[in-house]
Length: 263
Image 1 (cartoon, rainbow, N blue to C red):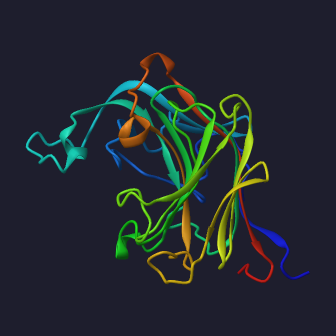
Image 2: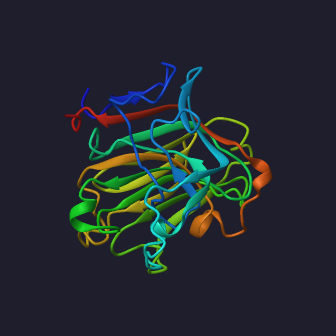
């Protein structure tokens, strides 16, 4: 019947080894927010499928930065660090899968401790053409270890973003987020974005009809699963080095679309 949810993409993480290369690629290196971790590629210590789960593991270890340049200017902070003191992973469907509208969900258990910053989020596939935040960013789940038990959802657009200080978002208390699995979900239609934890809706962003600056979400977005350490938000209270290694454990990622939207 028209309008019912239909599963269009999923990873159940049921084959041990490295994450499925048909579904996921990696971000590599120092990427954003002046975070401290080096994102590695194809390294089991940082990203692996094991026992039916994806495990993204942040580790306290020195890792050489192949892009190091001692004369790099301050704005090229990614090149100024000779070593990383932490490693982790960031998996993305960029170039492999992207969607416009649907229900996107992950069942996950979050890491703990000061300095951890896991996320489950999307970016517009046109980011190279229009840049951030014009491409749109939907943070289905963000969690910073210095605020235990508080799950964040955030949306960034050209009109609304944290750089301008007018970002849109909300929080929900999930006291056992670090010890139990929960389903973190987005329902995305042409009219609105709705955010859920275990089907408890806690944030809605309406399409206000004013155009692409506030609503760039009529175009495809791709998924990202990452575990950052430190950085602009995750590192606001420093990093507790006694907590490592820390694991972000994901049972599944599923994408549904309405039967009248699915391609």
